[in-house]
Image (cartoon, rainbow, N blue to C red; front, side, top):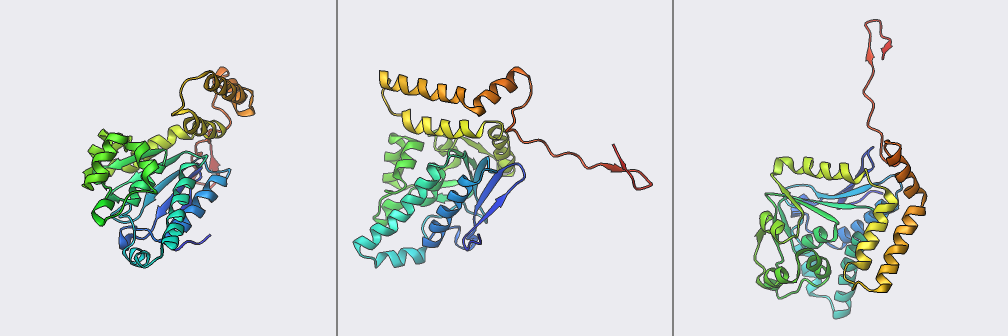
Length: 279
């Protein structure tokens, strides 16, 4: 599908890259980008060839938040129109957060307001030293509501009080300190750092990844009761009895890579002087 505000690329290794592509406005989003991101996330998650997704951005910023022209239109909306507009953003973030495939945010430059929501809704976030974060809503008389559940889960309640109330910008180093991003690196090593994580991700079982994400969402905040113990026992029994689980154990015992690990690209054959292939 052709998009106006984003680009989607698929690699032979099974990685889908979703690029925010409005560099002229620092990738600020509007209703079109929200709809296109939601569509792209659903398509990537449904593609059996995709093993993991990277959310990245063209230009000098990851995402500056909401587009000014969009905000001007929203200012004239009724309460019901505003609610429907906010629901579209909330549902897009939920689509990202609940994807079965692992997701990685590749962050450089400003990631403000809703841009922080995109980062927080991904499973893994890697930030370049140039990255800058800000929950700027309070200074506009607004609140970070739709992004709130994901940002709170990523940075914790204590840090959220500071940065949501003060609306002050903070660095990649501070984002790492409070747990909002899991990795930081110099800008020149951003792709290499992301690729190293992707290398580990493609070694995992696709069904196992989906089950692990469901496990984290389902049991992360539950008390350890008999019901939870029974639930986790059922989950691991299902994994062991699955085709993927059996293949994983068998490949480990046989000291080989499991079937889901992509084969490395074969080097091109050399040609002899006579033009015939060699090797």
